[in-house]
Amino acid sequence: MRGLILLFILVATVQLLCVPGGYFGHEHDDVQDVLLSRSILRGRYTLGITPGDPPMTDRTPGMPLLLTPAAAASGDIPAGYQLWAYLWLVVCDALVWLWLRRRMGPVSAAAAAFCFALNPVVLSRAGMVMPEVPFLALLLGLLLVLESERGLPGWRSGLWLAAAWAVRPAAFPLFPAVWGWYLWKRRYRDCALSAGFAVLPVLAWWAWCQHVSGRGLEDARQLGIFSLLDGAGILATFGRTARAGLASLGAGAWLVGASLAAAAGAGWVVRIKDKGYDAGIAYALCAGLMHAFWPYWYERYLLSFLPFLIWGLWLLMGRAVESDRARALVLAVLVLIPFPSRGVGLMRGASARCSPEFRDTYAWIRGHTEPQAMFTSLAFCRDAFYAGRPFLSLPPASAGPLSGALKSRRVGYVLWSRLPDMGSTAGEAYYRRFRAIEEELAGPEFRAAYSNPGEGTLVLELMK
Image 1 (cartoon, rainbow, N blue to C red):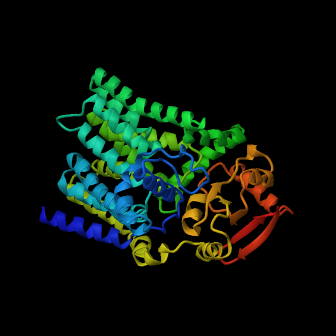
Image 2: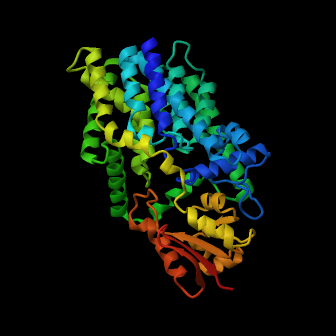
Image 3: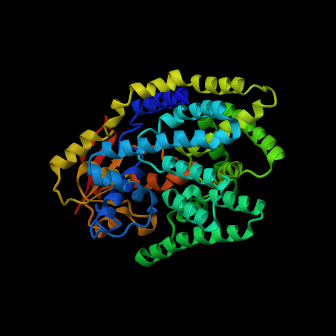
């Protein structure tokens, strides 16, 4: 046990040295959640950066609620939120070991947890204020209690599922995984109770969104990208999503990722043949199916698959290697292969990642525009946080010509940058709208007030 504690401390220290995986606001959603958490402390649910301060319906409240302790202690200082996010990652390290200990024994489970914790994808999430890590903690905690000797009453698992969804709406694959476990155990009443207590909060959130804004769930609207694609385009999107996910698993090589995924899947088959239904495997399969249909992929999505993939590899190795210690050694080697390149690089470059990429542009905005000047941009929450000006999101394509839509919203400036990789696997169809915006910004309705080629930014003023 002493050796396990020392190993745990070592892993947690390595992860701490990787904080932050990126500057605060790098993924935009992190700033949204922080702004919402601060508003919750004031008894509201708004961003606080737009005129009228309307209620926010595009983000479920779970992650902002989890951030309220950091918001109360840290306020405007990003480091407090990043430390809070790091602590959630340490919790995940422990939960991976606890969940796998029942399946692999303490030594192999420690090696698997080591393999998880030092994976470059995991290290890159250290201190990132995003929902994937807290969701993984909720996922593993739910499976740990559900499969314990005492079990979990249906109504409690339903509330747990609702909480996981509120933190990360991509938790939906966990719902059938848990309900399937109750059905396999012939606990039909608990299955019904779990479904009811899980779905009711989702419907309540949807009803509140409709009431305050007339808009439904944000994730359902995101699927509107498929209206821009034909059948071949949808199939191509599925292929690009699968390839991107496998490349994340294979450290950039999708064939390597495909081989690892196939090996883990073979291990899952072994487990199901020997033991029957497993909720963790069911979650991984349902989540993989969901992501195949979801026209976005970010490397951070891989996080919730890793414990189950590592376990699947261990199961498959059991067909050829009887010794648990030998299998543990193989897992340790698997994580040590990429660590010297990516892991050490993450440790060395932590301080360099703290600075926002548009630092000089934000300084110009603060020094050359009025405090009440209204802006719009792609990453409007992040830009508002650093520029200290009110921001609105870009108007939808249905709002008509950009200049007219901005004038009706009393927007005076547009902060534009080179189009980043926005994670869409829908191809050029997704970026068509942004290309059209770029063309309008080059027209006579806009005047370049500031340009920073080094940062790739333009501040354009809307002509009166």
